Image (cartoon, rainbow, N blue to C red; front, side):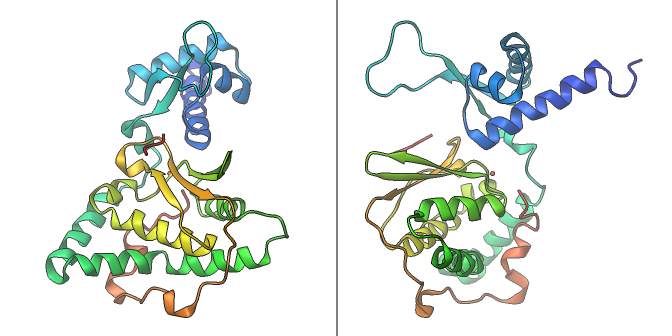
Length: 253
């Protein structure tokens, strides 16, 4: 019998670190994971093999942009639905049932109002953070920091024509798969906060590894007018009932 802290327990905790690293940084190569976690390439590959066999990770060829060098592209490892499910709470079925009931009783417009109300408080807080941000700080940078504080594990990637706001975790992804109004309401908030139209390129709810939103250059964040703030919903259907755990979730054109 293995004692507490033995090899099996250590392997399990290391695999949790591997999965967490992929959750936070997106699909990664074995070399990137080894560097981030301080492991040898041989050790990281052994853990990756186990996670792939367990169905927690899937391997695919790394995308390359521009001229590709010689040899086969490196493999990247991404979380599967099963692997990402370890980071979810177990309220998804209840949330879907509630929203289906709301849609049946009051129509799809009620679901849209609910989705808007769910992000209303977030919009208010983020607008204040944008107004207080140091000069030269982009809207994407402010939003990434705020989203990370709210458990969305966000980052920013520069592009030739703007920035990509990447959310590596979404606590309502499985609910949003059935009700995309949740993603649409969030995207509308980003547009208002950034000061112009943004484009949602990918979502975890649709099977992508990361929720990716393109924020073009030249937008000027501005305060959100009171008239644009979503209306409240009845007490029994407030957003907190959708997913009580708000502490914690590639590209498709």
